[in-house]
Length: 564
Image 1: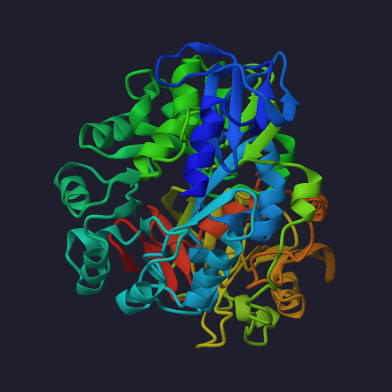
Image 2: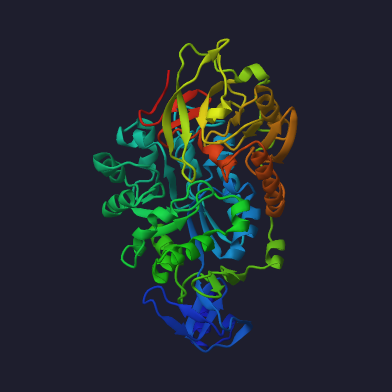
């Protein structure tokens, strides 16, 4: 009652506000107009706009435009390669005040304890981290993960203050064909929020998927796909990650009419791209540069996300709303000059004052002993299924090439850009090793290996030299996971990710510097991809068409089956 009365008193001006932002203009996302006057904040809540206020603290924002804090509507913080605390320090100063995350990367390694780690971390960060419950651990039955999460496990995790609902339901065949395990999970969240994940799904299958109560979708990669899903009531989350780049294709769909039903997300974005380009701020300025109306873009960045996920307490700079505010230089450049998250100024001092929690998932890499012979591809026919990379997409082509058999082995052919890809089970469950071919890396020598391998997070390795592949993959066991580049029997660069083989114990600045070294090392092998490490990771995700590989073999995703 005292807090309620204090908010009313400060909003009326009877008492000084805790904080007053003075000298700026508020961009109103309802009418599209500018509001002159102060912004008054009481605790974590905005209590006044458009009037003159006195405050115990006054922040001068003269000449700046105040917009609501940005909401990333779907991401995996693990893909930033740092802990939630470092992610907070990395992107909150850029204006991201709410992150709706799905911790299914760490959940695939250590199970429900990984989700609890994110739930506990969410109580301590400056930004508001909302933790969706991971729906598909593992994503399918065609891979070996470190854990499985069923409906009973999800029920035990429900009710946490950070929760909104069920995270992306990747097993769309399980939904439309009514798999009992999928039905049990969906039944838990009937009437609540369920995130979608249905690449290229259309027609009656899409109708069935939406009828299950699934309301948001970040896998639309083209305008026609996005429009069909919009017309059928889904909210479209425009995605621009480090690998999955859909902004250019979907920008024409974002208008003042569609903006209430379109949001922004990054899904998977690493510190290299965040440092060099930005996060949601990069998406905002890029969309405006592509001709999207500023009102539509800023709605998609905040208000639309709040509405889509039932966060009625944010998305506007208005009395009664959470004090998530970004002071930008202008619409087009979207450079944050100051940020408040829940009424707290986002500063180095505020980050230093946070409490943290110990990391989890240490010593999680338990791979079998590897040698050069582990990466042979025994075969009795020359016709070969080959994964074709589409740079900037996690969709792949299903190619077929003729590869000669020499001494019972199909060997890499760098002259044709046909290189070995392998997935090694690293959770200590069965020691599976599967091999295949991929086209699109440009690799001429050496090998690259990683424990960031969606979503099961086994070891993924590409190379043209089997000994270098064994060296790179074996090194991952020694450093508790991460990225390794090797050539000629030598490790050229590496990044240790000892938190479940996914996240660093270092700062995002340190991770950025190691990624620069890794990118240069990969380029020295002939790699032509801008982001080879996350591109490699997605080649093992068997819910994205058309051809992928897991520890159990090559997967025809269109037919949803392992190729014999």
